[in-house]
Length: 180
Image 1 (cartoon, rainbow, N blue to C red):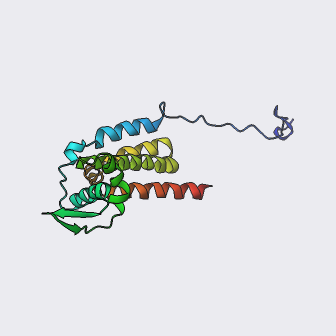
Image 2 (image 1 turned 60 degrees about the vertical axis):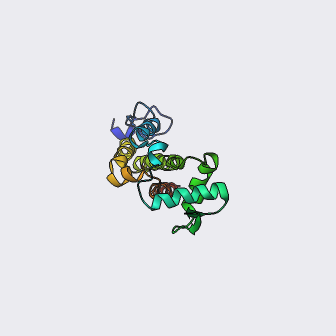
């Protein structure tokens, strides 16, 4: 009796495919990444209200606050209004809703930057997972806050981290579209 004439116990005449067990991370990764991001990148609104990046963060925050409270995107200096040097995109779209809710505290805008940093870390995880599996995703997400520029700019009210997060989410969406 030859090997070719053996009958397999399955319904088809094909040999069974042995699948390797996939070793998974014991916990869902996104809560761990979220806690890591909050631990490494959180800056209190009080600390962020010092607005260390002069004059950029001042123009963003004061312009957004004035837009939320007065309806004008400008800056007041010595009772005179001046237009901002920057387009109103980031301050009006991202910051002014928070300043409408909390108009007296300039540092509350850091919560938008923190949310964007968390979104960027989750997008890095999703991209790393797509390219290299679970451990690749975890490595990408854990490495991102250790990049000095990302760590620095995620602690000030600026547009860098929110637009980086949008770019990362766009890259992830592109990979999702290409896969389907």
